[in-house]
Image (cartoon, rainbow, N blue to C red; front, side, top):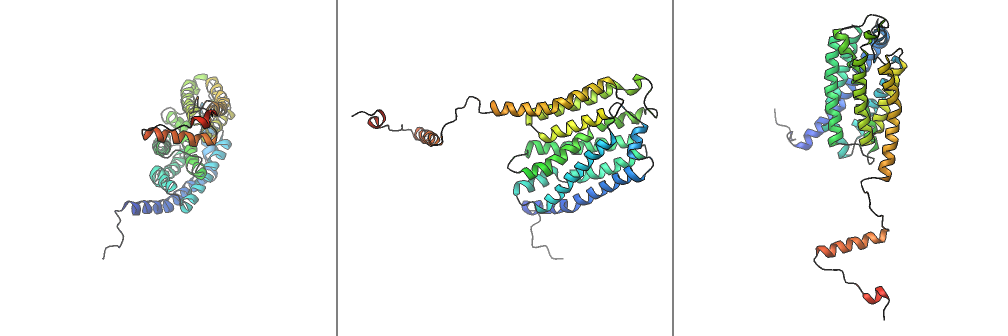
Amino acid sequence: MDSLPVDLSHPAVQDYLALVRLQVLTPLSLLINIAALVVCAVLTHPTIAQVARLYPTAISPNPPTIAAYVLVIFLGQLGYCILLVLANKPETKRTLTKAVGISLVLANWVMAFWAIAWVFQWFLVATIFQGVLLLLLLYSNIALLVYHPPTSARPMDTALIHAPLQRLQRINVPNSVTLGLAFEPTMPGAPRHYSGWHAWSGFTVVMATNLFAFIIVVIRRDLVWCIAATWLCVSIWLDTPKPAPVYITVIAFTVLHPLAFFFSHVYHHFYGSRRGAVALPPGDNALHREALESQRNGRAREVDEVATWGGE
């Protein structure tokens, strides 16, 4: 067979092939994920929500609220698939292939397998899937934040690439509840004794994840993290009863996340990176640049004293 008239080792060709692979594999993985979750949430017995009610924990979320959250994630991923086809900016293509890449495809498959393990009440297997999913999403989110941060110049990238990945990351961390169920399942129904809630373990998980989200919101003024973190806090305190340490913490962060987002923007607006700078009229900028160029060339700018001081 004759060799192809294309150099497959060329970086541009490899990037193009990587984008084509994502255009095929990402919608397929999303379809598998949606199908698995719909079947496990509607057709199986028990369903995902019924298992959650059968084994309540200190950080179990409200099923309808989480269902709406997952629906938003799927809509965001649908937009991501459309962006894969319509993207024409080199920066967007690099973000799709280098930062996200195949990790989102694998994350969709792992999430589908997690749903199956959950309805079969294989909590240890579900915990393993959660750990793999956490690593995949953590890698993608770190790559996005460090190498391809969201920018106002490309709002579609922020809405369709950063937002779905960050929401998936946020929903995955509290689901570490499966780790506790894997080794010490709660009895069906609400625990009769306060110690049965594992209240302080739940408090540790909720406090750690929300503190991390709070720091992200303050430092990066990230609206997606703010909405996702607040949404999950609401979903936890809507599912009652809850032990007091968890209940108080999620209510407090429901208020703190939006306040942090608002005041971080206010602080950046009034005390931004150009602290102490004096705004000059447009004409003065040109004079300033001219003076700098003159200093670089080793010569001072000549000044007409008569024209300046009005002398004769």
